[in-house]
Image (cartoon, rainbow, N blue to C red; front, side):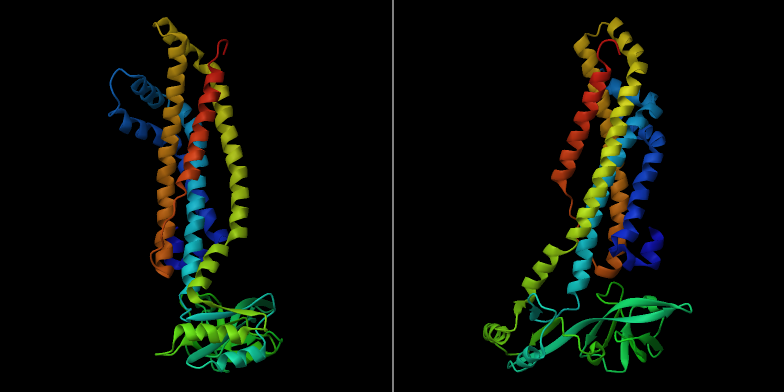
Length: 388
């Protein structure tokens, strides 16, 4: 995590590169559970009311740290993975949205409506709207040579602001301003372009080239910026008239930002939920299986309680309280692991996107914790029935 934050913070916006870090942190906490549950139980044991089932349960889980950890670890992984991955996913989406929106200073954007791009006649009509400056951008690619034979495709934007013989490149190109970038363009031709700027981390494209480097590809977006004193409402009407009949739409920047935020990362998030569901199914099964397998070993303790005068209901209540204490310990450890994972990611993203709002899915996590607790209590009570 420290290596990413210091050396490559931009990679934190990529789920495939950063989510394994989050998962490893939760797994590491799970491996440390036998050492941690005793510390946490002793910390809370001092505040428990004396001569209560809660105090007895805390003392018991402290005395049997390994056995407690066998149940707390699956709870830790279940809750910790769900919380860390869901919060981290929202953080990376928010950071990518900030990075995507930051360079867009236009008041309006003209976007193709179900077509491959904006036709040339439309671009000419947009440039004819009074009181505005229009910049078009075309999605393309450039290729760089890695080693002796491998061509690496890099997403690029062809824009008006870059001179025909220049290029702006990302930091991972390992070039400096004034260097010559040897690239292959989208039509297969080779070009030597002067590096005009090294892009900041997290830029939307890997490179920016001159508009002519798009060749015959149609522009993918037009940015419309109002000049001082231009009436916004009148411009909106003029833009709607300009796009009429050209299968395009003109939208205010705020509307575009809302659409970008709403549609961002939906497919990736669905894949994350599928993987998370599989993992949670296995960890929940591990918890229930551990409780059922441990039940025969606890028969002596339950008989001792009965000999001391505890009724059957009291024995079952003590069993439920002890399991709930164990689940609570797992949740506390999960919260610690989540705090470290999310805090590290937030700090990393701070370097490239600034402060990003942390969104916690409290309802989802509450339902998950409640369901886990119910399953654990049910498994423990089944194991504690007579004859077990």
